[in-house]
Image (tube, rainbow over all chains, first blue to last red; front, top):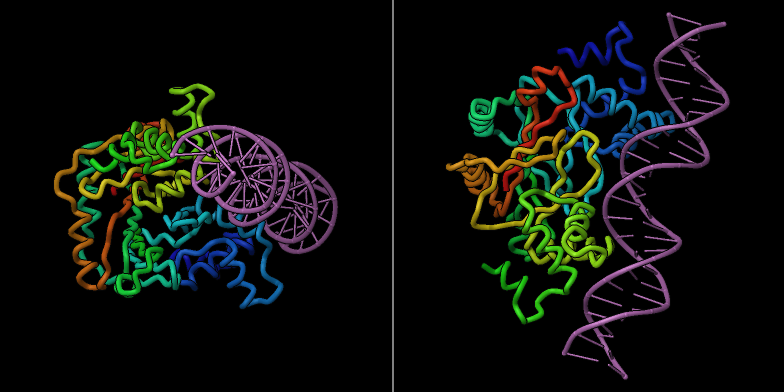
Length: 157
Length: 157
DNA sequence: CTCAATGCAAATCTTTTGCATGCTA
DNA sequence: TAGCATGCAAAAGATTTGCATTGAG
């Protein structure tokens, strides 16, 4: 896997901060903000974690290199950019609950979205590369609790 | 249509600023930021347009009332919240080009997404209400120009 | 007159940038 | 030693809040 060689290879392919940022992101299964990534690194390495500035710069670099993708969860009140790994060959579906912030990977075999992509590519002449799908609604618990702030997002990329 | 009665009814159902915000949003076909909405109102009403604070508060109110929905376009470098009307009965597809910022409504008959929604609802016990799909890639022009920053998003809700 | 709505200015929060320092080849 | 990487502090930009004023009923 190219990611692993970037993380551990001797070619010095990435600055240390970017390696650690990519490593922290690959260890989590969810979309992470810069601050969340820093907290993760602090738990691993204590106060040796990179500064926020380095993390932001690393995220920018990694995105331009194509390893990660910036995603805005359409959370009500969510002002933070989040990042997730981009695995070109794979498709991931996530159920994200705003209340518990957990992100559950769905077992989705046939990708309905890619059928739509194909149609759009054919009709509009675009070359589509990735996509994000967010589903909003109420989970079963919130339907019972009548909690109107509950949120569900399905991210797919 | 409930929207129209909220906009023009005599029941004073909405504060003036919220009415005008909703009106400005309903006149545009795209997702709009607060500032864009203000510019739209300025073009219509000159300097009588509401202040940004009122627009932000109106957007918050309208979102809580369920008339509009906050959407973060996953633009590279886009830090702004955008809003779009929520029409429960209708489905809209948009092609959004970052460069020209135009949003083209697609003619999409059968909603592949809603099939996915149904499956997710059945399997996970969620009640889904709306969804956003953003497709990233390169348009034909950018493929020729070899401009790597070009961006396409398909929003669907 | 009362209370909601509004506007202005300041505060807040995330992200970016300037600049000086440190590290590595 | 040169150049990239990093950190700190300040800046930038969007959104929110405090507070005083306005305005409709």
